[in-house]
Amino acid sequence: MSVILIALNPESEDTKHHPKEKQIIGILCAIVSSATFALHHSLVQRCFEKVIKTKTFATVLRMNFYPMLVASVFGSVGLFFSGDWRTMGMEMKEFESGSVSYVMTLVWTAVAWQIAGVSMLGLIFEVSSLFSVVISNLELTITPILAVIVFHDKIYGVKIIAFILAVWAFLSYIYQHYLDDRKAKEDKSDCIKVSMGNGEI
Image (cartoon, rainbow, N blue to C red; front, side, top):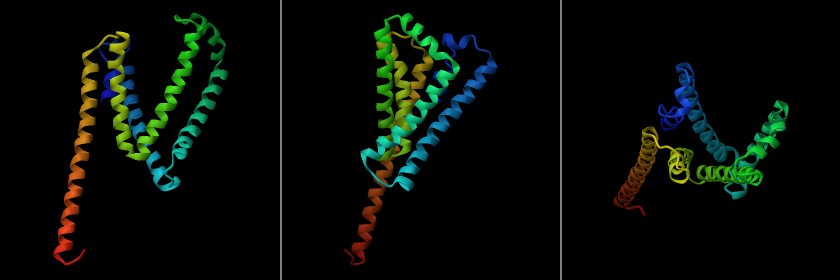
């Protein structure tokens, strides 16, 4: 819901001029992409548990490296076949902050994505795919709030609602985890009492 609210903000200038049909397609795409994102995380966790079966940092790096390599190859092929690479020089020159800032933006975006990818896999590896999705959704809704603070972007009521929904989901996850942990401790305590009652150690 947070993703849909941010993507299809009715108060945003970007969505005011879109016809209703495109907005409906946008909603469906947001739902499918969110479901695919969650499915991907679940499959990665399954792969860690059933296929790889090794818990090392090198494994996490390999799981991040190969998909990124494939994506980079396909992206580069698409860039050259479409002819968009011809406009990169002009785009760099017309960049408002200068050519150096343009290159630095690309470099640090790539670095940030690598850190995000490794962090996401680390959360799946150490905790669970569900926790990784919760954190990713929280980050997705915090980003527009940070854009308001850092870049003085316009804030809309929809952004605030999306942020509240994401925080609510995060707190719900933490609370459910607390309940599960407490129940597990109570069950363990009951098992110990039963064992002591039967004269077992």
